[in-house]
Length: 425
Ligand code: GCU
Image 1 (spheres, rainbow, N blue to C red):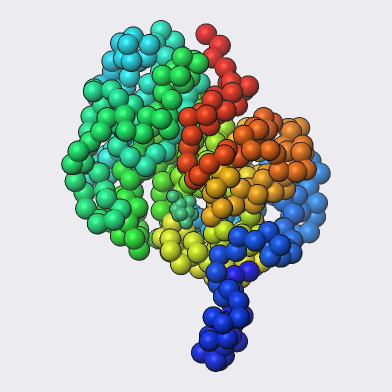
Image 2 (image 1 turned 30 degrees about the horizontal axis):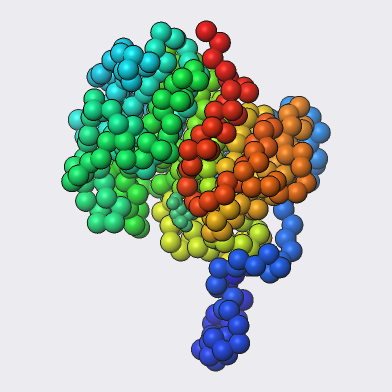
């Protein structure tokens, strides 16, 4: 654990400060040394709060799973409101001849309040031309929709700048600027639809939770200590986008795969945990409070998230800073909430902050839950070679490279999706 014991913090802090600087790396420094990870014990996802062991799928679904969900709701991400009936959708553009005739493009305005005050988000959806009921990726993303592919018909909207907190039209928008991260034509060619939504439109990601005033939080009472933080808000928005997809005949509601990278990987896991209509989840480099184990002291820690991104989480989360072992769950518990649905974790060899090994170990620790439900989690005991995807019901890959989504990652995601949801018609 990275924080100093309480007595050090209080009485002896000043006296020891000089010594710490001189002698060694301060205990609060980020650990990147495997030999210093320390021992830890994970809560058993198959042991109920009353100490009884789960041996039947029924007990998992009726008792243990709700306990874990409750722990995440009360202590970590906070409780989200119900779906609500006020959300409205306006598919204002339908083009049947998009991407050189290979796709149908739709642009849909989501009004999260159904009133002129919004907030509004814009969903961009491509589905394969001439097909209905396509398996579809729903992707949370960081930028305007015009960046995911060079398609001049994509509308450009004002967006929130996380650095200066301003809402403005992009100054020099570059269409398709991040197309390499998405591979949309290939996705369509393989029979999948793909929908993207800019997470900042659900709620701007502004320091100290300043975005709550402008995003979906604004339509609800201020959150209590167990109320939803920004990750809860983005996850709720993903479910509302799924509500739209459920109405679209070109999308197969039984085969929607939720994707997110980094903080949006955490979001995808939390959305998939709460909303079992998502048929599968892919979390890319989701790291701390995503897929990597919190009790493992490597890379980013609970303390870092609590300090730098308190508004992502619920108020109660703060009490675990410096007290990780008190967490009622760990990331393997979050992964187990996706079971028995397919789950893929992608990581990067240079993403030490995100702790790829911690994600692998969490996948391994979630495996007994998948096994209980008749699925195959991780069968390998050792971290796989780089760029060698494990394609099980819990899939895992560590690409050579940074905290990113690589074009080669999409090939792996498509293989993963194909194994479960290949286009039938
Ligand atoms: C920071 C944060 C991570 C997060 C990442 C991102 O690095 O510490 O937890 O995953 O931002 O979302 O880009």
